[in-house]
Length: 285
Image (cartoon, rainbow, N blue to C red; front, side, top):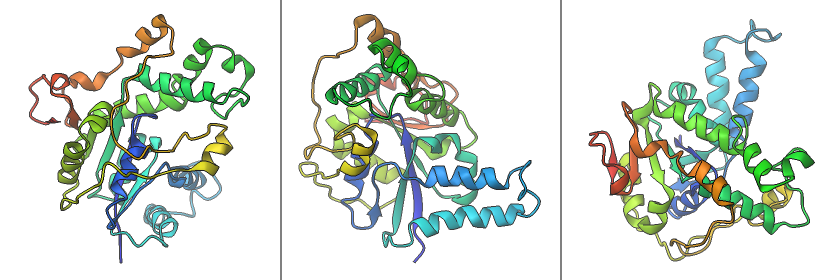
């Protein structure tokens, strides 16, 4: 049986693991946290690109088969009819994905960037005696200001994902993309999941939002961030105060470009107040 592929991407700490944990309740679906497929994908392309010894030995058709074969091989032991592969890099690789999977859709979870950084800072502080894999030097780890600046850099965890998402929203394949707001997902999970099923053209499934399960203890331990990918059983909003200094929070709180997407064909599942620009291509609840 040949599985059908869709992809999950977007910002970190914005509900992608939660979304995967919910979707995998459907026995027809396979989903989870970020997989290594995107990194392997990049490695293959690099090995056969111009300037390498193999560039003249592997033609376009062979490259296509190799890359499609990567997905088939990695998921060969997965019997699900529909596979959702998760990685932040997919938003920067839409042309490649659409060549390989013309019917695929990309689900991008988003969250106020200040709260994304707040969540990562909270994770960092929860491991008081661990340097974690998020930072490359003592200088980056020094203060909350250096930590957030490092994470928000264009080629780092938050900054890369943010810029790649912007690229995808105005790409030639933007209509294959749906933006899912984290707050909306946790406040109205049933409505959001129903809209996602419509977007990917799958029959409805009765999910249990009171008993969601997912954990990746070994992976999180290797990063030095315990419970980074542990999902709480009940999908619900959890109010809390930010631990970021006010000036730092304000600096990043205004970066929600998806609130007002101009000339963009991407769909959105966002609060109605955030989708008031009148575009016909939005999805809202």
